[in-house]
Image (cartoon, rainbow, N blue to C red):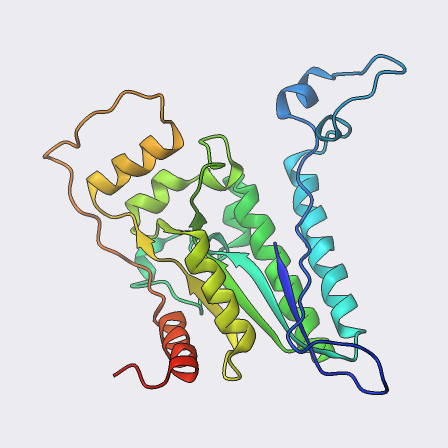
Length: 264
């Protein structure tokens, strides 16, 4: 979770810049799952790396992320100079339904089913859904102008098959909702939501949909570069895309037009 804060201009001689921002990343598990299961204990007097000092379970980390969202939104509500909050959520807070066939195309109006996330142990999706719902509840209750960016899977060198956000990816692919986003596009989306006066509500953010067998193969190779490379089978079919981000595309066109003039 990343929160971008837009501050109003302050008076009374106080120095402030329009559009200044701060970011709060959520905490990550500081103890590996293998160490947690084995009951690892450090020798007395031995200092360990920061990632080895605590051993929270995935359920505990869900609670940590929800509390982080609550604390940040409370702080925003108490800051009178705050103009807008841009809250980074995930597409996993949108696409997990018990019966995908009931939804023709997922968009910002959809929410993941909390009971399904718990049942399937989709902790990443559960954390993102609960923390975003918590943020929205506080924002509406405290009158905070908030916009949420529901990002697709952020691709990059640090992504591996062990990342918790990848649990359920095969099902997402089968249902036509596996989407990714690169860092540049995600940053541009945040800027548009941050600066555009008409921005409101949630925005699904992605610039690549994994629907073709060759796309799925390329995605798998990115996660496990050392794995052998096989050509996609001719029997595999293209999965129909069942998620759309028209709302964000319209916002970014509007924002670009405001900066560069009419793009036509």
